[in-house]
Image (cartoon, rainbow, N blue to C red):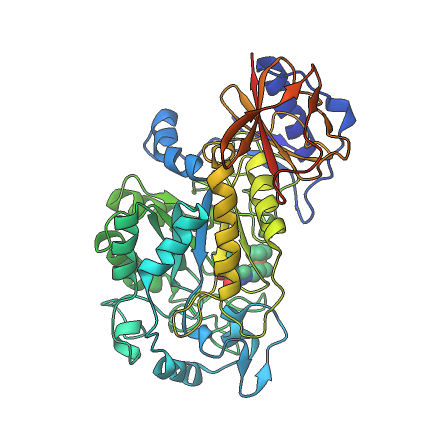
Length: 474
Ligand code: H79
């Protein structure tokens, strides 16, 4: 049975569930707006199970739900032009789209490979940056829309080994570094491919199959069988465990839902424990990212550059986001989100039951931008103190308070205070039967005075980004 519910209905549902279990609520006080850009009712899907039970599915998803925070890496030839082609700087934000936005012919774009020689590439350093930030998994663009492969693919010469002076597989040493550090390795793979003749749309410019006026390439099924699948087989058999396969570019007209389900099965047969995002199929609702009605394959929803307004009970999802405006490196993009904003976005996501996949775009030499490194370090310091309120934590049982967010784990509700009360008195609404209240600090937990619905705190915020108080309930 599928249930159609609006976001508001889901909120009420969440409140009912919450009040039925541990919490009293103030449902009427909160009127959440529907998610902007949402095109229709969100469906509470039964998870796509293939041949497993719900329990087996939950076991497969367990590490992912515990992790909550991962690193996205967009890296490819587009880091060479870095947003500027022949002296003209692209107006649109995304550096990795430059082939499309600047209408660069394939033969011209191919020349970028001659300039891709990332001598400073240090995958151990990348993994260390992710790990120190508190991230538990890395998703790297094995192949983006330009079709260029970061590994030594046997089915094409359009890869780092055959086409660049670097001549070495970029994914092998990253896989090794991840394994050593205990970070889960995941691959992004674009279904849309501007370089493969059987995948390009049949319209000018030929490689741009993302445009709505593009006709489907009649040879596309050959591309799926004889290129995509062999490539995916390489990725799933030669790099150890692949924790997530993260598809994109599934919206092109030539790609069908049947192909998506077939690919999903194909991957799960090669690695039964792998997790696959919902862009493997055709159910995604635009950038809002959750599935529309229908039996679509995929293990989690993928909001892009946005965070849902409320929690979405029973649905696994992950918001992916950039730290500035671009995914792939752009030398001119200085529009960095602040460290405070990034930390609060992570909290916001977890307070709604999701994962946060935060992007870095290394340059053509292989360096992650210093601003990203700096802010990730700050996030890591915050996580060192407050990680227990993020890892394995889930959605708030009640609407977000005006002063911050709640996350929950077992019997504990974590109050993440963004706006510290001037008089030190914090109103706790909707959470009852508090047994203990403790501030998380770098010197351990410190008890906090409380009454039935108030916390009595010091006058100055202990943490400039978000101070967390663990409320243990009876
Ligand atoms: O890799 C990054 C971007 O390059 C990639 N996704 C992130 C993770 C991306 N590719 N395209 N886009 C983002 C924007 C695509 C927008 C559209 Fe559509 C495609 C508009 C119409 C078709 C997807 C489907 C969004 C709305 C409907």
